Length: 343
Length: 188
Image (tube, chains in turn yellow, brown):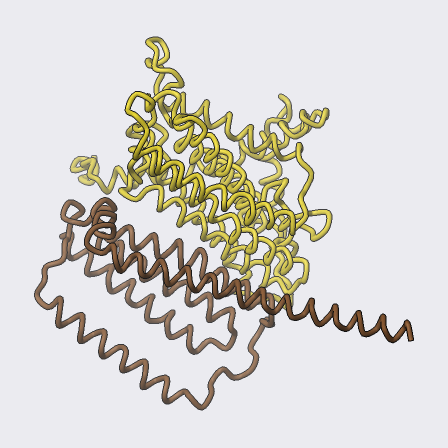
């Protein structure tokens, strides 16, 4: 037996490395599964069957086949493009999304690193992909791409605030920025209690995250029927997959995880009754995650795409004043609400 | 062991910051300069993390990278930012700017060395400040500067709105005047 294995000790570094490998495998697999869910859920909501052929059983291998197809495709870089910026843009989009997964608590101890400023870290990291989208749109030397990138940036600037402010409400109610602390602070029925505050924060967070990820009905930046997938018009092959398709699905799953953590009690059982508390936290987390992912997929074919000015109006005149007001209400609640109302 | 790691990583990040900062001023394309600025800011955030100032680090990323640079890129791309090299960004104030930059560097370095010489910085997580400490410091000992900065930012915000709206009113008024003028001419 090599000396290396004999002297092997499970140090903190090794644990970290194993956790990172787990994240690096879970994210692509999750993105593939999410892509399949997207095909199937949308199809059934629209009274279609969706993919049925690939793999045999209800087309389960469809996204896998798509993935192989995209890997084999030629990676085309336009002649007039700004080549280094064009090449690295998908990485700038995808890496921050991977980093989001480091702080999502799947179970009480199943988390890569519970940071003291976890919530703040998540918000900071999730704002970086916008730079990648701007890079992609600008460097493509294509007007559709540039319009898509600009729309995306305008949307991010408008919807960053409601997300941050509704998350701040969560942090106030929980009294901590650590994600595990936030989950632990949530008793049944989670942060939907105190009445209304949590629910409104959840709705604002949900609407804001749909817009930040450029998902329909806020998908003007990618609007395939008018500006041909916006910033990614010129992309093909692997860069397209990582910059757009994988990134979108992985982002959606990550934000579902955040919503579950912030508002739905994370890995805790939905009601603290005897037989339910035996079920491990990871099962609860995954169940809630599926519900959230389904919610994101549900709004997708349900609402028509808004117009750009309607979107800006909705953010600046609706969500931002609403979330600021919510912070005031939450502060008043924390200071003045009698103890018995909390539980 | 820990300290050696920190020192090594410090030099890595310092190199990244320096190289990209030079990139910001020497790039021949504004967008490239702005992207170098992103690298500089993220490098600075890495150094904050190295010193266990996590809150400052992520505030840096959220505010500067996620909002300010995005806004800068948005403004540049919306106005004039062709692909490729274009124009000369150097002007007559080059020498003056170098002197000012050197002076700022000198003063900052002197202040830092003067106040932190011989102070042991925390090398492990336990001794580091938490977000709770930061919050308590801001809202107790430093509440007055905090409020002052808030009022200043509010004033700037109101100012921006006033400037943006005055333009709009003037143009709509001039358009109305022009329309009335035209109508009068048509009546005659």
